[in-house]
Image (cartoon, rainbow, N blue to C red; front, side, top):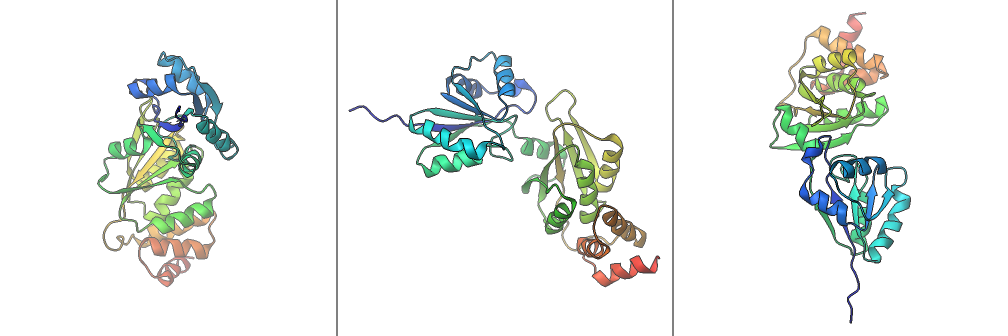
Length: 283
């Protein structure tokens, strides 16, 4: 009796920007998959052309806007015995990119999931940052809204591991300013832009300096931010004028004075009333 065909999912790590980083396994999967679920079908076809790979399988778009709706169709393809490859614009699928829903659905339905590993912006930026890489945590994209972003950063202010974030270019200055205000302007960090591409740039320095650079330079492209973990013990107490400036910066970004004072106090292990007194005695 013939065996029932068994489909499987293959997560494909695509180059971040330099097509020379594509693996032989990636070429093999693109050429042999029955279905390719691509975050951007045009980028997929351009990648295949650059790699001189003929894609024989069916190509479907699979991005944040249709991921939930399209996942059941892909599971049905698995039931029919298809090899379904998932390819995003760069890096590994499901890491702040489409893929997780299909992985979960395939596993729940009993289908195997494997990977053709490839480049990752997370580990590439971490390695280039010059910051400790023995222990780190990936936080993905920070909340878009300022209040939500600042709230998340307050939760992370005491995290001792190196932190890695993704950020959009139109929010990078606001995020760096919030990082400087919450973690302290002296916390070391690196802004990694357009990794592996022609105009790759890595800016290293204290958060305060990076925020000022970003406001002037208005960096574009794919951005990954790496931030040093919190030092052991309470943060070094800044000068009074720096504390006042940190509160004023948070107020200018949209925090109420009460929230700004609380955030600055928490960032430096100070009592809220101490920061309150500094702010109000200066008026």
